[in-house]
Structures are given as C-alpha cells and as structure tokens.
Image (spheres, rainbow, N blue to C red):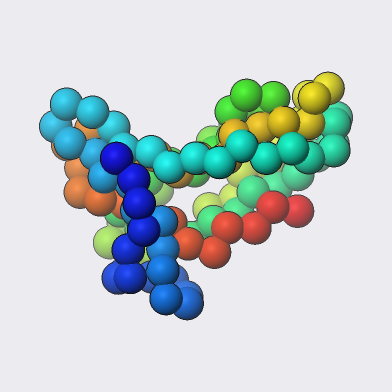
Length: 106
C-alpha cells in the first residue's frame, strides 16, 4: 500500500508513505518520460527499515538504506531508447512504513 503522510516529513507538509505488511511489500511509483539514451541521477530523502529508491522499465537501478531518520539516496541511471522509466520507493516485507520526500531528477 501507499499514500501520503504529514509526519514524518523531510521538508514541507507531506511525504510519500509505502506501507508493507507481513505478507506483501509496499510501493509507490510514477512513470515519467525523459530524454532517450541520456544519463540522469534520481535523488530522494527516505526514512525507514529497508527503504528502496530506484527506477525500472526503460532503465534499472536502485539503492536502499535502513534508518530511523531521513537519509538522502542517489541513483544514477541511463535511459533506454524510449526514455520512459518508472520511479519508485519500496518498503520490504514485515517492516514499518517507509517515507520518501524531496525527489529530484537531473
């Protein structure tokens, strides 16, 4: 499951929330179209146990952290011929909610 939360946030009033259960992962994602065959870096601030940030589809890359305070994660990737990727934040089975805020893509 996924949604938004007003606490904890890294900045502003809201953060994304991915809620995992004992039997399923939690994920929030959004598909974006970028320039084809171009290098990018996805950055996001995340908090929680086994919090993953990454891209899939036209490129595949991810990284993760596990912590009780916000940490900034960076994911470099290169798009394929379509330029379309899915940006995601992912929480692992049986862990508490994870939170994600302040995404940038450059």
